[in-house]
Length: 469
Image (tube, rainbow, N blue to C red):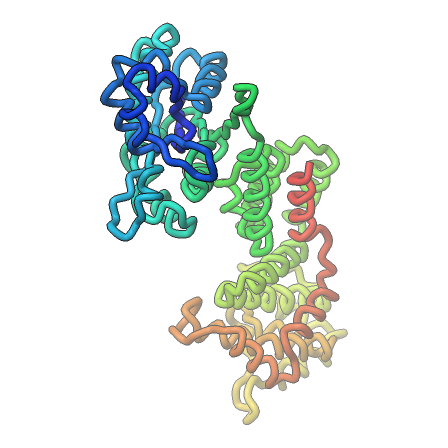
């Protein structure tokens, strides 16, 4: 497993005693490397770094890197080698930037460290791959820096890090905007492989921070919440979640696709036995009865409605309408429907002495206001035939299904059937309004008919519960 390290460089990342410099080169030569503010002399990173680089061979033994050294020592305790180190410095060239800010640029510090690190740590590692990336535009502005780093981090010299097993970030010494941008973009690119290091500059000790882990967990929870709100279970597969969350989301995905065998297989991998047993039993019960399958189509339809997938919603409404009309009609007339014997079976039922009134009702039944279009019992029955049979026994149910059938007409004119007409919530509501209904009344009535049990809302609650553990 390869190890990478990204380091942001600031004015404290390379240090040397002023006394050492003055003794070696004289006070006059050293004076331009410092600036005074409130009686305090501070080392200028640009001028000082360039001076150190030129005099490197004479002073390398006196150089210190107080932030990076403890981090490297800690890393070498954990890993045999560090495959790549990327030093991120600054080099501001724009003419509008004052010398005060340019003097703090760390471009020469990066060159100094590239020469110094292999010499100091040659006993730990024989060869070092040290790369330098300099940033020069809007380095103190977070919004601009974030956008720049989001592009920079995906190209050289960072490119190979995307394949590394672990990437460490030491973003302590640099400019705040760069530090923050590298952290956030690093989390986006490397995910859980990114580890954040912090150095106590007083004790010269290094410790990893748990921020990436906490941030990624909260980020994952936020994405998960969003996916669950729209029942987007396939997207959950891309998240870093535990095995039970994966199993539940896979179960829900397969169940939505009516792939009950794969749903049961996914449920069988749950560690929660009560959930596992409940879902497997419920799934098997769905497969056993036609009404249970219709109930499942209804749950499916409600999800499509929540997703605002209105064409798909109408597909399912059509299937529900057809299924309910057939189910209730067959129940009332005592018919065990068979595709091949329909014509004979329905005729036998109508010819029964007890069904004379039913036969008369069906023979007189018309599908148009003019009374010219009769029911056709010679062919495989359609929704109008089932509704007509049901109407004889239950006018209220038949009336409700006739109203729902208006949505089937809307479906027939859509891309889901025979035309290319648009579908929208507004059109659905307008269609139902003509029947003195709306979608809330539709769902209320269907809820009463189907009495849904464990819904996908319950599955979502279980997934949320698991994410809190």
